[in-house]
Image (tube, rainbow over all chains, first blue to last red; front, side):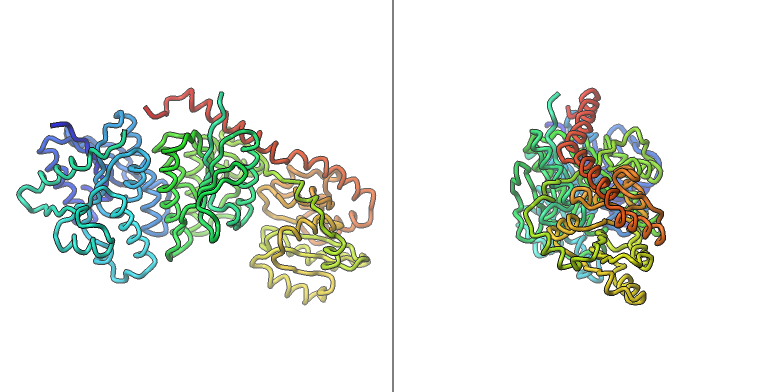
Length: 210
Length: 396
């Protein structure tokens, strides 16, 4: 079977733990590594180090915000996205284009996922853990509306959406108006979940440009 | 070496005109095309304007600038950059763009992201700094904008600014070495000041035939020093003058109140907004143009007065001191009412002196022709491309 080189974009990854997503992404990278798939994580941190090799199959790249201070989570995220783009582009060029796909977790780095796909032809998956409509007490606020706009962009621009339950799938279809076939349900508690993730990864890699 | 194909980022471009950046990018892009460069402009959408059009050879891409509500202006800027970057990524991918040129902090994140993804060098023009606009940095919102300016200037291969004064300001406030900065002044299209209009009729809208017309054009804000003109008016006794203050800004009501308080409502006319054509006409009929700025990165109004043939009284602050020369192209005064009144009086009472200033100014303004400005800008582009081509930072 041909090799697979995924890059995962996540705004949290241990030791930066904001919610449960950090653990879920760590669970994913551990599963991928057990299946002998080398994995690169691009995440954010304020610590001075930029690169960490945790094992022969797991590399971490840390992005810090080029603009300080910030006035909202949106401005914080979106300037950080340019830095994420820089890191992924540097990886892409230094490894002769050997990035097969991006797996973007949640809305924070959707702009980077979209732009890297459009600029470099790297296909991307949007993994949705939860939706702004479920999290925010006031989904009509301007801030929530920006986040929903980014979620919608991710749902439309991605090659595939992965989520963890049928109810989430229905919610995504209803809120973001994307077709059923574009969403795959992979509960991370399932026995074959990592195989299904890898199958999903392989499904979109032929869309890589060039 | 072949000239590069340019993609400029500007958040305003005609017909979307917020300030001076739109006409600057418009004129510069046109002048570059006349010098055989291929130029794209990526900008925000505007009601009634085409999303894609070719304007005298300049390829304009207008992108959905995000019309949903946002909590504040900076968040709108961030969302606008998301849309700009997404749409322009495809344009760069399908066109032979070899150099990016960003104008001001508002397009920083889109242009920086695209620079890295395509590995195309980036040049940035800093038209003014947050520090200069706000007379310092006073809160986190301003600090964030200033930090974005710092980010853009660090990421840019070379930085263009309009005056030596601005180069020093960028150096001191953003910690950018002056060796990375090229001073390219703003330009002016002097032919726009020669159109056939009824100047007598225009003048009669603002002053009686026997009144001498003293003109101020600019934003009515503290940094332009406009209050000093009103305070100078009582010192002009014995001269039959009409002071015409053109522009909008937060000081407008205060100026009108002060004019009434001084009993000068028949001598000072605060017009508010006027059409561009009318303003150009005023520069042609004014007996003196007053530029009492406290902070001025460049001073495009000086070029307009020179092109219109109006003798200038100025404080010579910032970039004005580089465009103008005392007793040669303008009368330099201190930033106080007595000194300003002295300068106005000198021009209005010494006809030969005023004529000499006008004559020399009309010669000097030719240096600011957009063709010359385009040539200087191309030098920056060529230097950037030469260094880029000699370096290793390229796609495989």
